[in-house]
Amino acid sequence: DVVMTQTPLSSPVTLGQPASISCRSNQSLVHSDGNTHLSWLQQRPGQPPRLLIYKASNRFSGVPDRFSGSGAGTDFTLKISRVEAEDVGIYYCMQTTQFPRTFGQGTKLEIK
Amino acid sequence: EVQLLESGGGLVQPGGSLRLSCAASGFTFSSYAMTWVRQTPGKGLEWVSSISGGGGGTFYADSVKGRFTISRDSSKNTLYLQMNSLRAEDTAVYYCAKGFLLFDFWGQGTLVTVSS
Image (cartoon, rainbow over all chains, first blue to last red):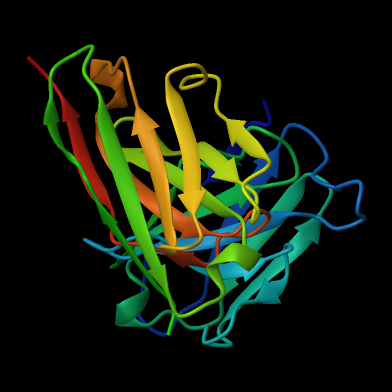
Protein backbone atom coordinates (compact mmCIF):
# COMPACT_ATOMS: atom_id res chain seq x y z
CA ASP A 1 0.00 0.00 0.00
CA VAL A 2 1.07 3.59 -0.59
CA VAL A 3 1.88 5.21 2.74
CA MET A 4 1.11 8.92 3.01
CA THR A 5 2.99 10.86 5.69
CA GLN A 6 1.97 14.37 6.63
CA THR A 7 3.97 16.94 8.57
CA PRO A 8 3.36 18.65 10.86
CA LEU A 9 0.50 16.86 12.62
CA SER A 10 -0.46 20.09 14.34
CA SER A 11 0.01 23.64 13.11
CA PRO A 12 -0.82 26.66 15.28
CA VAL A 13 -1.02 29.71 13.04
CA THR A 14 -1.69 33.41 13.58
CA LEU A 15 -4.62 34.82 11.65
CA GLY A 16 -3.45 36.45 8.45
CA GLN A 17 -0.19 34.51 8.41
CA PRO A 18 0.69 31.74 5.94
CA ALA A 19 0.52 28.02 6.67
CA SER A 20 2.12 25.07 4.93
CA ILE A 21 1.50 21.33 5.18
CA SER A 22 3.74 18.68 3.69
CA CYS A 23 2.68 15.27 2.41
CA ARG A 24 5.07 12.55 1.30
CA SER A 25 4.29 9.22 -0.30
CA ASN A 26 6.54 6.18 -0.18
CA GLN A 27 5.94 5.56 -3.91
CA SER A 28 5.59 7.80 -6.90
CA LEU A 29 2.01 8.99 -7.43
CA VAL A 30 2.35 9.35 -11.19
CA HIS A 31 -0.48 7.35 -12.71
CA SER A 32 -0.28 5.40 -15.98
CA ASP A 33 -2.53 8.11 -17.44
CA GLY A 34 0.28 10.61 -16.83
CA ASN A 35 -1.52 12.45 -14.06
CA THR A 36 -0.58 12.63 -10.40
CA HIS A 37 -3.67 11.78 -8.40
CA LEU A 38 -2.95 13.55 -5.15
CA SER A 39 -5.79 15.44 -3.49
CA TRP A 40 -6.05 17.67 -0.45
CA LEU A 41 -9.15 17.59 1.73
CA GLN A 42 -10.32 19.93 4.47
CA GLN A 43 -12.48 18.73 7.34
CA ARG A 44 -13.96 21.44 9.51
CA PRO A 45 -15.17 20.45 13.00
CA GLY A 46 -18.34 18.38 12.78
CA GLN A 47 -18.33 18.37 8.99
CA PRO A 48 -17.52 15.80 6.32
CA PRO A 49 -14.32 16.17 4.32
CA ARG A 50 -14.35 18.68 1.49
CA LEU A 51 -12.20 18.59 -1.65
CA LEU A 52 -9.77 21.52 -1.92
CA ILE A 53 -7.11 20.46 -4.42
CA TYR A 54 -6.95 17.63 -6.96
CA LYS A 55 -4.19 16.35 -9.25
CA ALA A 56 -1.69 17.97 -6.86
CA SER A 57 -2.24 21.57 -7.92
CA ASN A 58 -5.76 22.10 -9.27
CA ARG A 59 -8.05 24.11 -7.06
CA PHE A 60 -11.58 22.69 -6.91
CA SER A 61 -14.56 24.85 -7.78
CA GLY A 62 -15.44 27.36 -5.08
CA VAL A 63 -12.19 26.97 -3.15
CA PRO A 64 -10.64 30.34 -2.21
CA ASP A 65 -7.47 31.21 -4.10
CA ARG A 66 -5.51 31.52 -0.84
CA PHE A 67 -5.27 27.71 -1.03
CA SER A 68 -2.67 26.28 -3.39
CA GLY A 69 -1.13 22.88 -3.98
CA SER A 70 2.22 21.98 -5.41
CA GLY A 71 4.61 19.10 -5.76
CA ALA A 72 5.35 16.08 -7.91
CA GLY A 73 6.37 12.46 -7.63
CA THR A 74 6.43 11.80 -3.90
CA ASP A 75 6.56 15.26 -2.30
CA PHE A 76 3.59 17.58 -2.07
CA THR A 77 2.64 20.76 -0.26
CA LEU A 78 -0.57 22.55 0.61
CA LYS A 79 -0.18 26.26 1.27
CA ILE A 80 -2.60 28.76 2.70
CA SER A 81 -1.38 32.25 1.88
CA ARG A 82 -3.25 34.03 4.71
CA VAL A 83 -5.05 31.92 7.28
CA GLU A 84 -8.61 32.91 8.14
CA ALA A 85 -10.71 31.75 11.10
CA GLU A 86 -12.84 29.51 8.85
CA ASP A 87 -9.73 27.52 7.86
CA VAL A 88 -9.59 25.81 11.27
CA GLY A 89 -9.89 22.06 10.89
CA ILE A 90 -7.98 18.98 9.83
CA TYR A 91 -6.30 18.72 6.45
CA TYR A 92 -5.69 15.40 4.72
CA CYS A 93 -3.74 14.42 1.65
CA MET A 94 -5.03 11.45 -0.28
CA GLN A 95 -3.74 9.41 -3.20
CA THR A 96 -5.95 7.75 -5.79
CA THR A 97 -3.18 6.64 -8.12
CA GLN A 98 -3.18 3.12 -6.73
CA PHE A 99 -5.50 0.74 -4.92
CA PRO A 100 -6.09 0.84 -2.06
CA ARG A 101 -6.68 4.58 -1.93
CA THR A 102 -4.82 5.90 1.10
CA PHE A 103 -4.88 9.02 3.24
CA GLY A 104 -2.38 10.91 5.33
CA GLN A 105 -2.87 11.00 9.11
CA GLY A 106 -4.22 14.53 9.01
CA THR A 107 -2.82 17.90 10.08
CA LYS A 108 -4.77 19.91 12.62
CA LEU A 109 -4.74 23.62 11.81
CA GLU A 110 -5.54 25.82 14.76
CA ILE A 111 -5.35 29.51 15.50
CA LYS A 112 -2.75 30.73 18.00
CA GLU B 1 -26.62 21.21 -6.44
CA VAL B 2 -25.00 17.87 -5.71
CA GLN B 3 -26.41 16.17 -2.64
CA LEU B 4 -25.49 12.85 -1.08
CA LEU B 5 -27.53 11.55 1.84
CA GLU B 6 -26.44 8.42 3.70
CA SER B 7 -28.75 6.31 5.82
CA GLY B 8 -28.89 2.87 7.38
CA GLY B 9 -26.32 3.22 10.14
CA GLY B 10 -26.95 2.08 13.69
CA LEU B 11 -25.96 -0.29 16.44
CA VAL B 12 -25.35 -3.91 15.46
CA GLN B 13 -23.86 -6.88 17.27
CA PRO B 14 -20.58 -8.45 16.16
CA GLY B 15 -21.26 -10.89 13.35
CA GLY B 16 -24.37 -9.01 12.30
CA SER B 17 -25.28 -7.27 9.05
CA LEU B 18 -26.26 -3.79 7.97
CA ARG B 19 -27.00 -2.15 4.64
CA LEU B 20 -26.05 1.46 4.09
CA SER B 21 -27.70 3.60 1.42
CA CYS B 22 -26.60 6.84 -0.19
CA ALA B 23 -29.26 8.78 -2.08
CA ALA B 24 -27.73 11.00 -4.75
CA SER B 25 -29.14 14.03 -6.53
CA GLY B 26 -27.99 17.01 -8.55
CA PHE B 27 -25.91 15.09 -11.10
CA THR B 28 -26.25 12.25 -13.62
CA PHE B 29 -25.73 9.40 -11.16
CA SER B 30 -25.08 6.68 -13.73
CA SER B 31 -22.22 8.66 -15.27
CA TYR B 32 -20.03 8.69 -12.18
CA ALA B 33 -18.17 6.19 -10.09
CA MET B 34 -19.00 6.29 -6.40
CA THR B 35 -17.02 5.51 -3.29
CA TRP B 36 -17.43 4.66 0.39
CA VAL B 37 -14.93 6.03 2.91
CA ARG B 38 -15.05 5.50 6.65
CA GLN B 39 -13.62 7.49 9.53
CA THR B 40 -12.68 6.40 13.02
CA PRO B 41 -11.07 8.53 15.73
CA GLY B 42 -8.16 6.15 15.96
CA LYS B 43 -7.45 5.36 12.32
CA GLY B 44 -8.54 8.52 10.55
CA LEU B 45 -9.93 8.23 7.04
CA GLU B 46 -9.99 4.82 5.36
CA TRP B 47 -11.10 4.05 1.82
CA VAL B 48 -13.57 1.16 1.85
CA SER B 49 -14.87 0.53 -1.65
CA SER B 50 -15.53 2.07 -5.06
CA ILE B 51 -17.85 1.17 -7.94
CA SER B 52 -17.77 2.25 -11.56
CA GLY B 53 -20.54 4.31 -13.10
CA GLY B 54 -22.10 1.31 -14.78
CA GLY B 55 -21.62 -0.89 -11.76
CA GLY B 56 -19.49 -3.42 -13.59
CA GLY B 57 -16.29 -2.61 -11.75
CA THR B 58 -16.01 -2.93 -7.99
CA PHE B 59 -13.01 -2.42 -5.75
CA TYR B 60 -12.51 -3.16 -2.06
CA ALA B 61 -10.07 -2.58 0.75
CA ASP B 62 -8.53 -5.82 1.99
CA SER B 63 -10.04 -5.18 5.41
CA VAL B 64 -13.59 -5.58 4.04
CA LYS B 65 -13.12 -7.86 1.03
CA GLY B 66 -15.41 -10.85 1.21
CA ARG B 67 -17.61 -9.23 3.87
CA PHE B 68 -18.83 -5.99 2.24
CA THR B 69 -20.55 -5.59 -1.13
CA ILE B 70 -20.91 -2.29 -2.95
CA SER B 71 -23.73 -1.87 -5.47
CA ARG B 72 -25.82 0.81 -7.12
CA ASP B 73 -29.30 1.26 -8.54
CA SER B 74 -29.34 3.95 -11.20
CA SER B 75 -33.15 3.84 -11.41
CA LYS B 76 -33.18 5.03 -7.80
CA ASN B 77 -30.00 7.14 -7.92
CA THR B 78 -28.82 5.21 -4.88
CA LEU B 79 -25.53 3.68 -3.81
CA TYR B 80 -25.43 0.80 -1.34
CA LEU B 81 -22.99 -0.91 0.97
CA GLN B 82 -24.03 -4.32 2.25
CA MET B 83 -21.96 -5.10 5.34
CA ASN B 84 -21.89 -8.66 6.67
CA SER B 85 -19.91 -10.38 9.42
CA LEU B 86 -19.40 -7.06 11.12
CA ARG B 87 -16.56 -6.63 13.60
CA ALA B 88 -15.85 -4.13 16.34
CA GLU B 89 -13.18 -2.56 14.13
CA ASP B 90 -15.82 -1.70 11.51
CA THR B 91 -17.21 0.88 13.94
CA ALA B 92 -16.94 4.21 12.13
CA VAL B 93 -18.74 7.03 10.39
CA TYR B 94 -19.34 5.91 6.81
CA TYR B 95 -19.31 8.54 4.07
CA CYS B 96 -20.33 8.14 0.47
CA ALA B 97 -18.42 10.27 -1.99
CA LYS B 98 -18.85 11.01 -5.67
CA GLY B 99 -15.93 10.00 -7.81
CA PHE B 100 -13.13 7.54 -8.43
CA LEU B 101 -9.89 9.48 -8.96
CA LEU B 102 -11.08 12.50 -7.03
CA PHE B 103 -13.85 12.61 -4.46
CA ASP B 104 -15.45 15.93 -5.22
CA PHE B 105 -18.59 15.72 -3.09
CA TRP B 106 -19.19 13.95 0.21
CA GLY B 107 -22.30 13.11 2.19
CA GLN B 108 -22.73 13.96 5.86
CA GLY B 109 -22.03 10.38 6.93
CA THR B 110 -23.85 7.68 8.89
CA LEU B 111 -22.54 6.14 12.12
CA VAL B 112 -22.13 2.39 12.38
CA THR B 113 -21.44 0.97 15.83
CA VAL B 114 -20.57 -2.70 16.19
CA SER B 115 -20.89 -3.74 19.81
CA SER B 116 -22.53 -6.34 22.00
